[in-house]
Amino acid sequence: MKTKLFAILTLIALLATLALPLSAAETDSTTTPAGYSETNIVKVDLTDVPNAKDLTTESYASGTAWKITDAEGLVKFSEISNTSADYTFAGKTVYLANDIDMRNVTDFQPIAYNSGFGTGFVTAFNAGIRFMGTFDGQGHTIRNLKVSSTAEDCTAVALFGAVRGGCIRNLVIDSSCSFTYKGTSQKVNVGSVAGLMYSYDDGGPKTAWADEDASGGVGTLMENVKSSATVSLTYEGQGVDFKNFMGGLIGYNGSQTSYAVVIRNCTYTGNVSGTARGGGGIYGCWVQDGKTLLCKNCVFAGKRDMTSPRGWVHDIYGAGEPTTSVNNTTATNFDVVALQLADAGEGKYSIRFSAVIDSIEAYEEIGMRLTVTDAEGNTVKSAEQAVQTVYTSIIGGGETYAASHWGGNYIACLVLQSIPDNLGELTFSITTYAVTKTQTTLVLDTASVIMNGATRVEVE
Image (cartoon, rainbow, N blue to C red; front, side, top):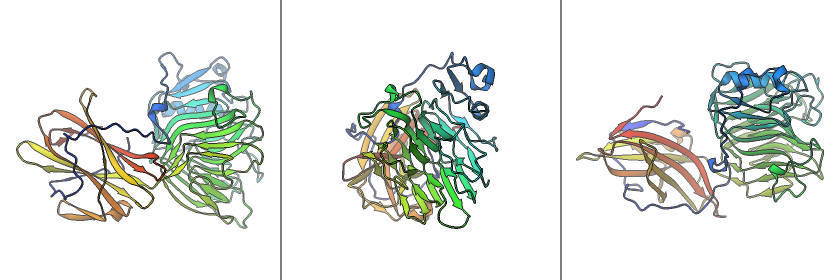
């Protein structure tokens, strides 16, 4: 779970802010958020699935599925995919078995990466090496993955270089990851998940990926992916005719068939910045006239600081609107940033959660959802509360903290008052949400803290 800038400021005087005692009535949310959701994941028993660390070019042909359990396995997957164009993983599935920490890997090459094109433009259509299988993250998170390049012939900076007729789903890439290009390549595409995505006639449309809004069938799919990684492309060459693109999730999309490229139920909450021919919060380019790109239930809740000589910069897309756009939403950053504790006297304590938000004008309502679970994981309380008042600063430990201290303009607070300290170990999870004028609820950030009485439990 994300705990960006999470901190404890102890023994403060609580402001007269929005208050929600633990005895508040339980509520059930009747809205379903767009974007990534754990409820979309179908868990698979991976007990008997071979480990990707043991994958070889010899065992590849007879295998149908592998699981990645650590950084070594992810590196091995990349190495096999980049051996030659024979290792596309078509008809095969690769799973994440748990969260993956890449902090000790300094030279990761994108999965299915293409080089050797000189200055020629490369797409997933003409890429010899491409990923054509299914990558299922099973809801697990990749952390501390740093991919960067300054190469003149670089084609992609992303987790996947080229995806054609493949599927990436159920994956989280967190804010410790970054994907960066700085140089003179006129063909580089940068995204946190895929540099290039293409739909082609490979094997026909995939019935398991069908979507009611893609009548011609689905040829390539990205679904239920969330990224808060940093994406950056800085072009240092001359002229304005360069063909590089960047997006929060995908750099470049294209198609050579009637089968749609589909991006659905995806969320980007990171920062995408730099100079490119086109750039967007979800993807950077779509330029195939007469073909279909469906972008559905996607949320851009990040930041973008991009320039384009063509002016092709938007929140969801860069160059080329989706052929079909369904329920895509742009949201403002609304991040939980601080936890404050106070002694409430007589064996009780109080907690204040604070979240920073850039803007409030675009929303009919912002608020926080509370879930309290005991040491066995049982839910003992859940509630939802709209924020009635926002602040430009709050006081903690005798000091004033401005919203700008956390990179925002306003601070919203949720106070849990007079909690008995004899309830044992409790986990308090706070999720921010925002409701637009279309009444779509956006879950934007979640943070948790484990308390044992008035003492915070440190978790390694």
